[in-house]
Length: 226
Ligand SMILES: [Zn+2]
Image (tube, rainbow, N blue to C red; front, side, top):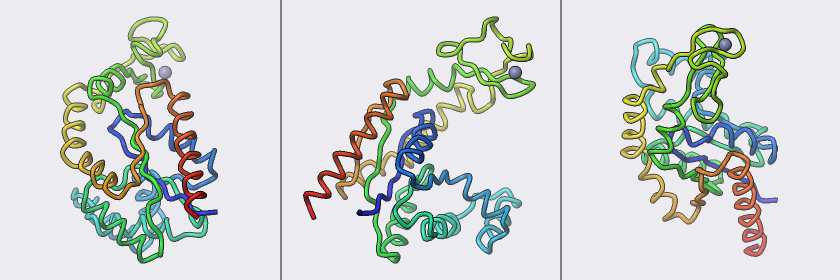
């Protein structure tokens, strides 16, 4: 069977992480959230991990070449032989080019980019409505999962707060960055005919179903092409 090298794309709050974990179970392919594998490389003190740590300790952004190196190591592993699911990378056109170049070295390419499409207003509604328990991090949502008593954690009675990441101005800033840096990837991958768009506004189970259908259709097309 052909390998399945997948990239998840979508704004913050689009549910990429949730869908990535479900695809990971469905497809039995490793799921790589960039932040996690970068942290793992630092923890395991690999050569690239040590290099990444030097930048992080200095308060600098980890340069693309280091991130690409860490990801390439993961993609070149035994567990990723039949494919992988990437989340959080690439985030910019230069990163996408670097990923393509690395994969080409390995005789591989991106099979599909799954874009989970969600409007800005929906992102603000989702992230902005989150309330987090100050004591133990339990998460509620004013609209989708409200606590029994406003501002109080159902589980331990602690105060519910808005995390910095969930403040409207911070969400807008993350969205601006997404539009400016990451959105150009939609065209980039569309030109390469690997972009698949999924409506991310539907409930998570429906989004999962649509992703499954999209991948099944793609595999049929691949089989016909062989
Ligand atoms: Zn709590």
